[in-house]
Length: 132
Image 1 (cartoon, rainbow, N blue to C red):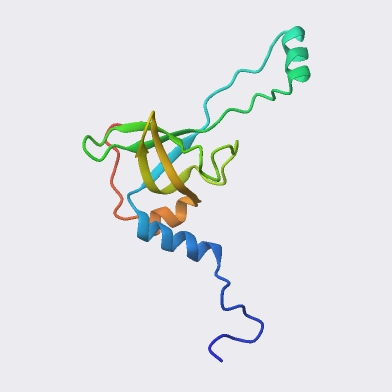
Image 2 (cartoon, rainbow, N blue to C red; image 1 turned 180 degrees about the horizontal axis):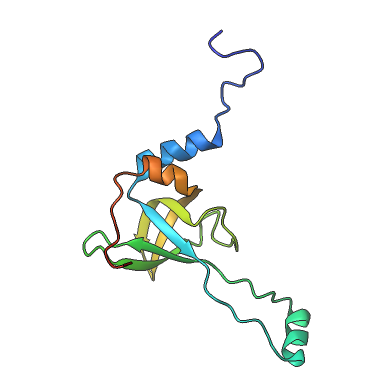
């Protein structure tokens, strides 16, 4: 047989999938950052948080690079996406298949990828002159 004994022909290591996606979808990369959320300070505010179930978790802020200007542009995950209501992501880098503009700018079909896979298979690296 082509596959070794005990191997499933359909199984593929996640690192290989991430590498293939980086090679196929680059430069369609969004970066995610968590906005700073201040914790309640007063005892009344803490009681309100406990009663309403708000734990202070904020949605990640997503940015893509505008193809025309090269400037960062704010986007959101499309509400129909599987990951639309996730509070945490496994990586700050997301590959997306489609950029859609309706009432807002949305990314669809997103997949988190590790930074190493993006660095190795995501195209040429360039220095950020603005970062200093």
